[in-house]
Length: 316
Image (tube, rainbow, N blue to C red):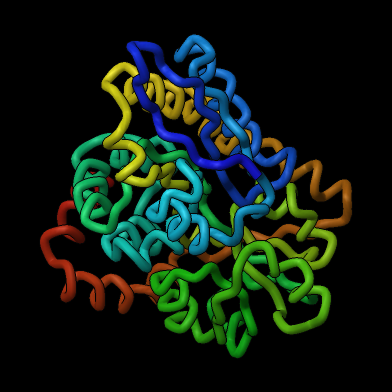
């Protein structure tokens, strides 16, 4: 494993460093592709003074562990998850309010504005620097045995969620029995029958072959999730301005690639998955929205100004 080395200046000469960029996705996932692109862009921008060790597939731990490692300086950057980060910065969980964003470009516009700056300011208090927001798609439900076109179809369903209170609250409101579990443990848990199903964007479902275990896919579109790309604040603060610019520029350019891959996957993956045996169903969105209104009420009471600002920014 690469050892963290911060940028130092010795006799006017920059010491070449290898930084660690960690994430939990497997080859073929847009997050994996974008992390490799970041490494290429950042190394070129620094003229080879920095190289990147991309630690993929949760080899540096699950998302929560990677965030802890970033604050501790064990790794430098992680393309992480909204759910894990919401345990440290609760406000980021509000991005997952049910049916908040009508489409992905709307979510991106909100994240690239004042909302993103607000989340970064709160992350700084926890020892993290938000470098940008990649995408983790609009999410749908998969089941081992049936489609779930109405909330009543979810009654009692044992469903895996990320470690994200918002997602748990949504599925409790829908009458399911949600339980958080780390992404890296999900395929085994589904195969062993611990869960009836799970929820994820199509790209994650496909890249992890979850449609082979839970072939019934209902296009609920119940919530959005970002992929916050964060650095340890201590490491970030030790970089010179030029290197910081290389980091943020590389995150932004790789993020544009990643976002577009996720967007394209929503349009292209359905026929591919159907050809491989997945059975799709459309959800009664109006019924789902009505059933999750209590979640809005709950969080609007706790964060009135922010929920109102999010609704306005999202055009609701």
